[in-house]
Figure 1 (cartoon, helix red, strand yellow):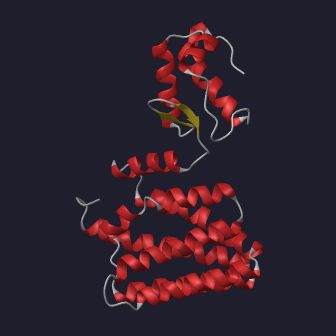
Figure 2: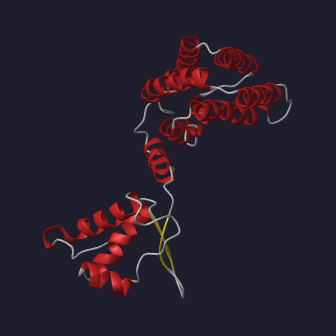
Figure 3: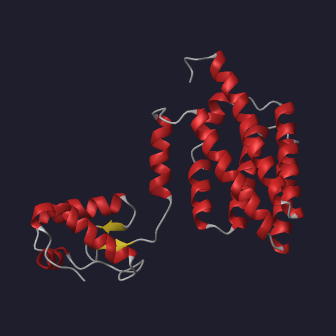
Length: 243
């Protein structure tokens, strides 16, 4: 499976070899890589080079390093978490503006809603209606309304991605919605009128999806993203130091 690393780019070659073995399926989730001693001999590299390469692979989420007796580098299933963490860092360092996020979300969420309308099953229809009912119930709460409603809103967006049956869309939606709370907390004023407007949008989107109207679902999801981004941008414009 492994060969001596190329000496002119030894560190990267070690990473590439192990990564390729994982991505090609030669190593499956749960498999334990050969011991450090065996890998050193197979790859003909130093302990320091090998350990640094394994740390990079762990940062990528491809392996998990277990310490102690019976430990080693265990192959992990592919996860969206490393990308989500990178997106979180971009957001915290203010490298992603509201305009950037809206432009991207409008495309991916519009496409997800459109595909969901084309592919939704009867069981998925029932579940989507249930999620909408939960959002409405959260909007009517007297305590903890905003937080619970935003969680219900997120569940609907993620469910539309799931219904679209596109693993890339699901991955991207999870990455975005795990990190968008910072914007909501700073810039989104969710008073009763705004929550009701959001509910109306969600009802219309869900209805279009259930009815199989792909273009209407796309249009409604896109306009929903841009409208609430405009509201948040208004807060930014009034408090430029806050953004």
